Image (cartoon, rainbow, N blue to C red):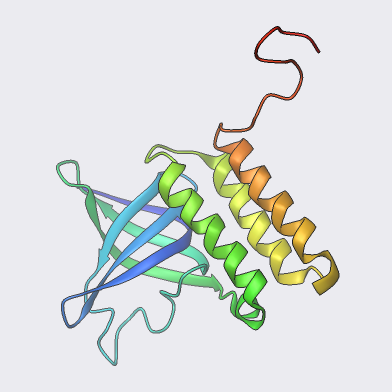
Length: 162
């Protein structure tokens, strides 16, 4: 068991038992990880309201070598993305970015994907309503590309013509 600290974005949370949560995190140094936050649902929890999806902070994890579910000992909240909930389009795009990270990012370190995710979420918070759709598409394509799934547009796949 190893104690690690890494910048992280919460991708999703699921209630587990009466007092705990399972948290899926995109971490800069350890990729996408699952962790249990014991006691997170208690009224006087040390986590407070910090374990909200799409929040940024610093995760303190105890990584287990034998299990895929690690232990989240603390989450130092840096940025709660409340403004994403002000518009359905903003929140929907942010949720798609989070889901894309959950399904396609590796459990190994992937700093580029992490940085692109955070940049996309930050841009969605600040972009005007008129520019939301192009910004959403740009954020999604940037993350798809960072994760290694960008289409090749320089040559035809059938005959190789430019």
